[in-house]
View 1 (cartoon, rainbow, N blue to C red):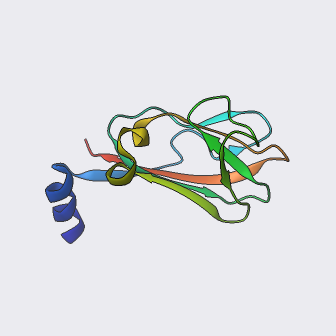
View 2: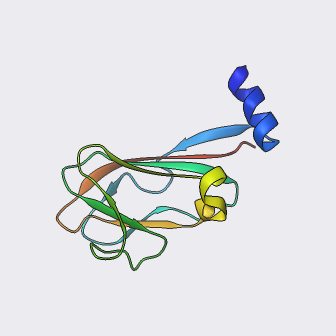
Length: 111
């Protein structure tokens, strides 16, 4: 498998994808969407809902303090190759105007 060989060469280990490891929706209350994970090398956050979502590395996230993720397919990603250790941090979210379905995938060391 080419992907497996690449991961082994690039990272020194095999990887796996974990879908929605913590939450599958975000509402008006601050919600943790990713736990701290030192084995994570990348994550993808997709806002499937009709409301804007904001992300941050702590529960202080709000419409005035966070990463904007547009409604109806907006995305945010982090990769260890670009963002360093921050990819392993907890991530929190809020959708101040209403509940939005989300899709989150984290890519991490397998086994």
